Image (cartoon, rainbow, N blue to C red; front, side):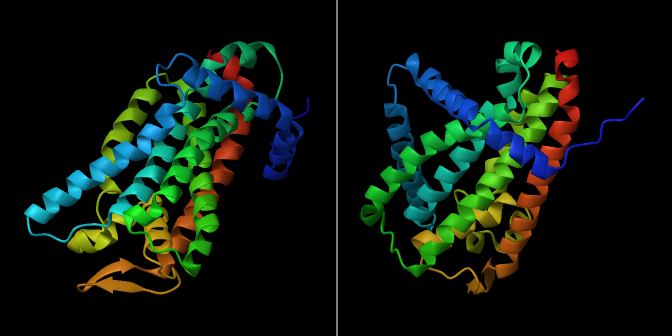
Amino acid sequence: MTTRRADGVATIVRDLWTSRELIDQLVRRDVRLRYRQAIMGFAWALLMPALTIAAGLVIKGALARGGGETPSLAGIALKSWAWAFFAGAMNFATMSLLSNISLVTKIWFPREVLPVSAVLAQCVDSFVGLVILALIAPLLGMTLGWSILWLPVLLLLLLSFTTGLAFLFACANIFFRDVKYILQVLLTFGIFFTPVLMEPSQMGRYAELVMMNPLSPILEGLRLAVTAGHNLLTPLDIAGVAAWRPWWLGYSAIWSFTLLWAGLRFFRGSAARFAEAY
């Protein structure tokens, strides 16, 4: 009797590359299905940035009336966009196996294709929102400089962190069906433990604690690099409070790539039992 050796990450990535046409078809299908029965269709992708900006105006107004420091509207819009991508990708990826259970139980293909295609379909939505934000950037007071070169790095970290976590939740959801409800709770309250609606400098002594959330430095890095023109290799203090530390970015990078590696390995190791679990 021989024991099957666990596939390495390189093997899994090669399998995904071989299945790129299937991934493309699934992404196209998911995007079509997502909007086919929606009254507003793709207008939803345009509506989200508008709602984000409206929420930002409400928050700024409330803080201004209270005499507190008001966060940047452009920063709120960009961080809310990133959070919306994360939340949407996690929701769809977590359900990706159960939503395609007929494929999982009847046809062989790399199962990693399903959560990957769900995350990429969310990328399509988010790209539309990002284009809208770019077009209205001058109205939001964005000042673009050389620090925007950090954008690809930060988006790579966001994608890696989200995909790694998506693998774990998609896998867990097929064995424990209440995982999707746990995810909803985490997403509902998680926004209060990330600097989406506020900036670290407004959190006082809780700033360092909030930035221990691996997603927080990515979101705050987006705000500083894209909307404030800050070089992320330079520390920043505002009113005696740590607003940015370069090691925060390294901390998020370690979490993102470790989570992606662990998610891939765990998902591949559990894939043989998916059909049995259903």
